[in-house]
Image 1: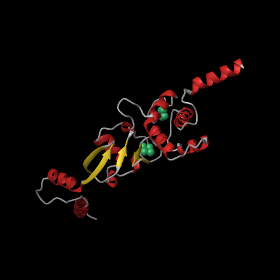
Image 2 (image 1 turned 180 degrees about the vertical axis):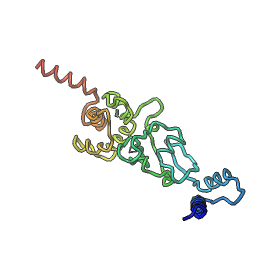
Image 3 (image 1 turned 90 degrees about the horizontal axis):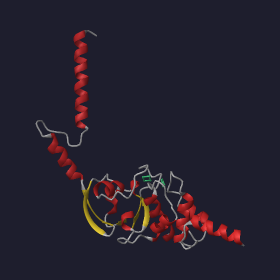
Image 4 (image 1 turned 90 degrees about the vertical axis):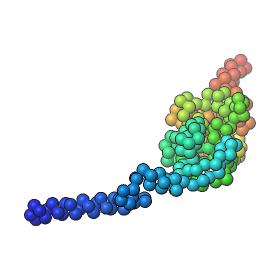
Length: 219
Ligand code: FES
Ligand code: FES
């Protein structure tokens, strides 16, 4: 191939590549069109309206249909109590309740929640009064870094509501197993769940152990 032919071949390939890239864009631009205007118009058109109750507050939202519930809560609504751990449904840090049932908000598209009621960790207390599960987590020292804690508490509340404790410690452990804790606070988390379920007295498990060993020593 001579030098001129090689140049023409390269020019042809370059033009094909540019044309292909342009045609694959949503809303290909007409000559002279303002790219910013077209992009934002396309984005606005693709938004959809959803009506969701978040922590008992009715919200009328216009959202990108690709938005996950986790991103909606954290980025749009400023409810950062719900944590993003893996963002892939593997850790449970993002657990919230939808109509009273626990879900992983990182795997839930907000657009599917029209008419639904979402509760996050910010919505379980009543003003300054903590939810009994929050109190039990404090009493049992059921956290270290605290990153997994909101998801653990949301799961723990649902675990009891779903009837998965029933005095069976293994059942409670199994139904809490979707919530990972990198600090390994599992024994104390389980102690908190069992206390709220009424299976053990509401006490700091460490204090309880001290009382029991004192009793054994004195008897
Ligand atoms: Fe959703 Fe890990 S962030 S399961
Ligand atoms: Fe640190 Fe659970 S308390 S990850």
